[in-house]
Image (tube, rainbow, N blue to C red; front, side):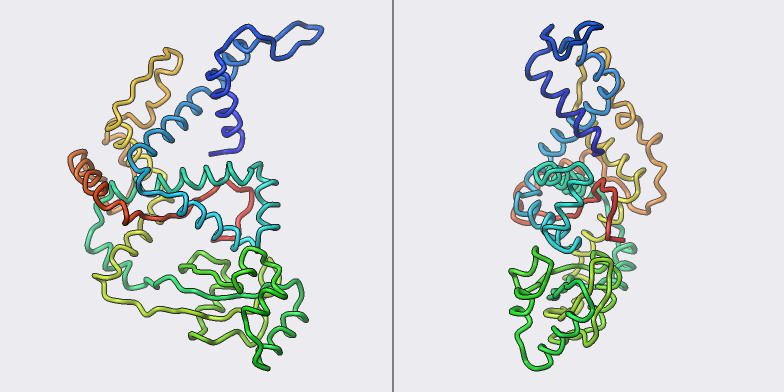
Length: 334
């Protein structure tokens, strides 16, 4: 959700809750502006997009809320914070982009709900899963110490060579405040970290650390590989591969629109405001009109989705976590 739309949604929602009235919002020598005038003007400018966002939030929460927990949201938030080099740097990025911690976590939750919807409504083909398995690598756990200059990084490496404990050095030296307290440890999948970090980490075996500082946009890293699981059989890795494929499908706007179209149709949306009657036309169109995607996967039909939803309620403990593509002004991820 874009920054201006977040603001518009909040203002419009507040005006609706308060009840539009003739109370004066602002005045000047030219006259007064009432709440009702403000609401009408904002509805004309942002009404349809705001209604789309509110309906999307309600419908996705209703149908897939059991798939996304507060713990999932916090884990995603922490992971993104680590990618930006710690809490201080991440807070600066959020502030620059117009977000508070709470509003950004709301955005993450919306993204995770969207991912759950795409996964639940996608019929993954066996050929697609087999192909993805060939290049799949399980999530790995590494520890890192981030410092501002190469000299300090080399001093850290010298201390490691002399037998110092990596976690202790991370707590002492690392400027990544998000991970330093945990000994610099972070779990990630391929493609989630900045390229320099990932390339260096993938070359390490368990227990090894980088003998030379690794430079990135955030400073100099010393990296230690803690856990690098071997890829298991296709059967055992299938769920993880589906999660990976789901993330890839989220970048296909036409495919996501097709999924949302089906989800919204199933929700039986009724819009009573005459001025906003066409707000959901982009989603409540025919499948033929919304099937521009070249994705080989197919969106499940209503009966299959209903069955999936019923069974997922019985297996709520198998909730799927996901990652958001936030509307940031800058990003360190590929």
